[in-house]
Length: 136
Image 1 (tube, rainbow, N blue to C red):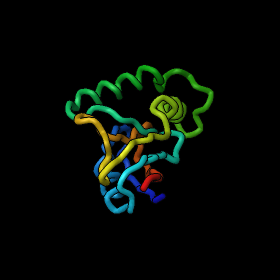
Image 2: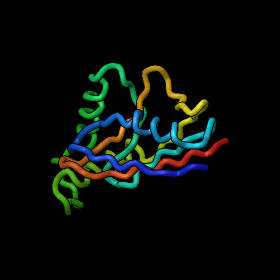
Image 3: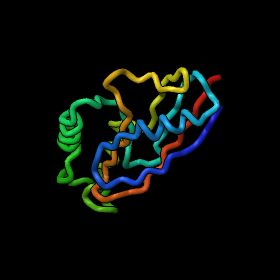
Image 4: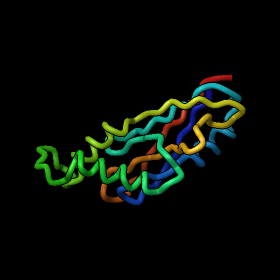
């Protein structure tokens, strides 16, 4: 087993491709094949696997999430501003963890797949992603 963490600075609401950073970490691990757990340690950011070929996909996903959890819905929880509760809802929808198989020290993602950190808050944040590789 190998474990590590990535610290990622976000610029506010965005879907940030973190595949390359995860790939670099995996290449340094002493594992050849197995599964990789990618875990986001935050309640207002999430993880997802999506298409990496057409940027319109990411724009459509952001708009869809904004429609599902608008800032103007009158939430009771707004301690950190109007984007606070919508960010929690969006994090629930995108999820906090992914499991990805790997072999030959490389992720077994599909041709058009990438791993994204979904920053749901309006301002920039420092996010920690925990990586745990299990295998041989």
